[in-house]
Each structure stands twice: as structure tokens, then as C-alpha cells.
Image (tube, rainbow, N blue to C red; front, side):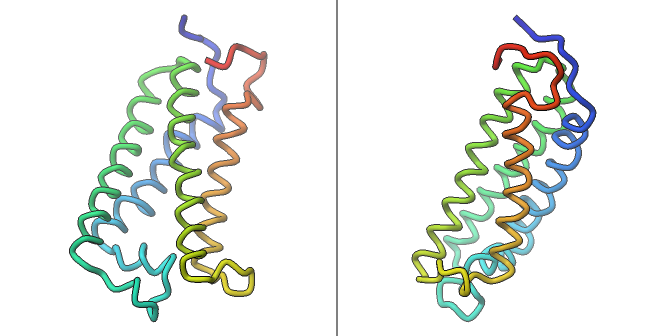
Length: 154
């Protein structure tokens, strides 16, 4: 049964405006038009793994398409419905992507033997900080923080 509980303004603005802007700018745009920025955010330009290859380009374009799909759903699906259950299911699915991003960055650092705090560059820290902030907002929403009266999870 659809929930008619209103989505608080903070979550509505964050998930339908700010989050898609990050997905389009930091995700889709960079992966399509400046993938070197994406790859050097995990692998320093001096590292041989940061050399762009056709296989990298193909994967970055696929990733860019995934970010465009997420942004489209954030902008249009979430504005189309006020059903809290739909919002929570959607945000839970995006949360999987957030955790995947954390893991993939961690795996990239481990592969380079750069997981020590003093070897992590500002590029990695900024990626972590942005993703962590978005993830915290997503988890708070899923936990019902700021949602008023408690309802079922979905």
C-alpha cells in the first residue's frame, strides 16, 4: 500500500536536485568527457595504471551511462511519486552503488599498496568525503530520521 507520508523538504531537494547534479557532473560528465580525471582520482598520473586504454574508455562510458540513468530516475521518478516506499526502495538501490564505490576505491588503493593514511592523496580523500556525506544522508533517510511519525520500512 502506498505511503502518503510527505517527504521532508531537505530529502526532497537533496535527492531530486543535489544528488542528480553530483551524478551528472561528477559521474556522467567526467566518465564521458574527461575520464582521465576519474582514473587519476584513484591512480596517480605517474602510475602506469592511469594510462587510458580503449578498454578503459569503454568501461568509463558504461559507467557514465549508469550515472545518467541514476540521475534520470532521481530527477523524474522521485518527483513523479510521493510514495515513501518507492523512495526508500530506490535509495536502498543507490546505496549499493555508494558502498561499491567505497570498495572499489579501497581495492584500488590496496592494489597500489597505498592504503596507509600518509599515502592517500587529496583526490582520494575528496572522493571519500563526498561519497560519505551522500551515503550518510541516504542512510538517515532509510532509517526514517526526520520523517516524522514512524512507518513501515517500505
